[in-house]
Length: 261
Image (cartoon, rainbow, N blue to C red):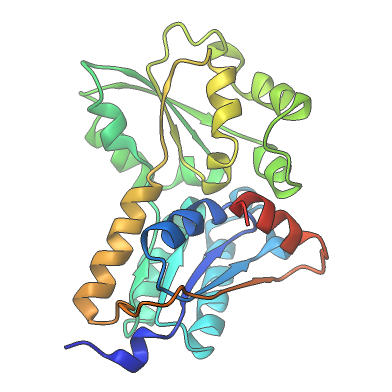
C-alpha cells in the first residue's frame, strides 16, 4: 500500500565525496519527482585507503544521521563503503531500504567471447572477499585484470576530470594497457571514476567499452521503493539538498559542475 506522506521524504545518497554525484545524476534523471539529500563525506575521503572497519564505522554514523533526519531510503553511492558496510547497516537499519553499488563485472564479462576486462577500483574494494567472489564467479567468461587506482579519487575530489593532470595520472595507473590494443572493456569500480570516464577511455586507446553499474543501481532503487510503496509519484520536480562533512566552501560549486546544474 502506498504511503503518500513517507513517499515525499528524501532519498539520501552518500559517498566519500563527489563520486556519488555520478549516481545522483542518473537518479535525478530517471526518478525526477523524488527529493534528494546528497551527503559527501569529504572530511574522511578517500575511503579506499582506509581499513574496512573504519569505513564501516563511518558509513554507520552517516546513515544513522540521515535516517534520523528523515530519509526514506539510503543509496550508498560508493563501491568501497558498500563492500565494507552494506551488510552490517542493512541489518541495523532494517526499517529503511539501503541500496549499494556492485562493480559491473557480469555485463563486462558477457559483452563478448572471453573478453579482456580491466577492473579499476580502490585498494580496499579489490581486497574485499565480496569482490573476489564476484571476479571468481565470472572468471571462466573473461580475463580480468584488477588495477588499484591510487590518487584518482583525490583528483576527482578537486574537480579534475580531464586535462593534462588527469591524463598523467591515468598514464601512470594504466601504463601496461594504454595502447588499448588488447583491452575489450573496463569496469569502473568506484563512482568517482565515472566522472573521468572519457579520460579513461582515451587513456585506453579510445575504443573500449565502459561499464559502471550506475543505471543498475538506479533501477534497484526504483524497484525497492516501489516494493515498499514509497515511490514519489507526484507531478512536481523534486528538490535537491547538497551537504558535506568538510569545510571546503567550493564543494557545492564543484557538485553543481559535475551535475551540470
